[in-house]
Amino acid sequence: MKPLPFLCDHPDRAGGGKRVSDLKLPIEGECRCGKVRIRISAPPMLTMACHCTGCQRMSASAFSLSVAIPSAGFEVIAGETVIGGLHGDMSKHHHCDWCKSWMFTRIEPDMGFVNVRPTMLEDTGWFTPFIETYTSEKLPWVTTPAEHSFATFPEMSAYGDLIAGFARTKATG
Image 1 (cartoon, rainbow, N blue to C red):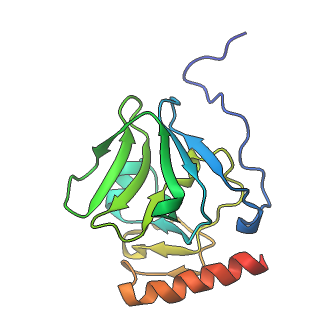
Image 2 (cartoon, helix red, strand yellow):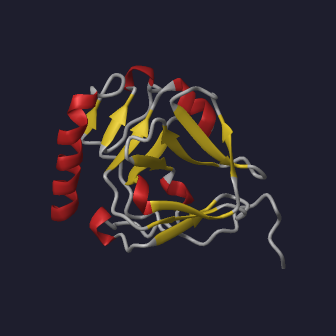
């Protein structure tokens, strides 16, 4: 019997209990309909949950999840994306043209990383947010296991220490 088209027919990808150090590269992922495929070939720099109202609206959820990947370690391997969300000068939110899944965000000018939605990846069991941002706009019932919380975004000068802290956490599990 074929599953109904509105039911989730994806296999279990969570595989609970994994750590970032368990992530096997390269890893691929796809949008909901499968027309856009991505590949990550570099280790994550940082993992995040953002509670801003913009992310709440774009993700249709309480927060969005991101994994920062070095730009050179990220590629779209099939399909094409369109810009969605706000069409501002800095953040370019890439979506599948067909199913409208929010796939990744590029910051312009290129800051050396791409924020990928980890839920698009084939394996998500390794993901836990290391930082959470915009807790000032967080829904009152939301909690995350993030180790660092910020009312808005951290100062740019703080990211070096956060990335180093994430790397230490990754190495030690």
